[in-house]
Amino acid sequence: MRYAIPLALLILTVAAFFGLGRGRYAAFGWTQTLLRILVALPLVASAVLLHFLSVHATASIIPPSLPAREFLAIFTGILEIAGALGLFVEDLRRPAALWTAILMIAVFPANIYAAGSVVNGMHMPGIPLRTAMQIVYIVLVLLAGYGIPGRGRASVQHPE
Image (tube, rainbow, N blue to C red):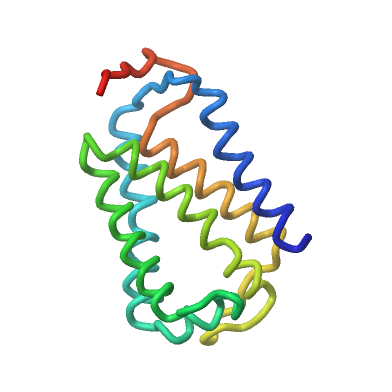
């Protein structure tokens, strides 16, 4: 139960964003570009400072039931950088936003596992606060990549 409710809320956040959008998203100019920068910076900072330079500390918050925790710490750092960079490549912007949101859900069990503890001198927030923070961040990432849901023209689907 400790993991189920917060993870369900994160999944529902992504589902609600796409449900509201129904394939229609409106870009919002320079503000959206600024938002891309603001959501990319924590991804890059987290990857470099936590996943690469503090691998052992990051691995320590991954639940012990998962194998290869140091590998997972480094791998998720690589994915964070890929997501951050993808937000600035027009053809990759939406997939990068979607996969970054999915990554934020996938890594959330580590945040739950570490909730309320001190890791590498940093106090980890409790589960309710951390869940709220993650919901806000996921929405910002999706807005940065897709735009405002439910507005603008429907996305054109090209046959493969």
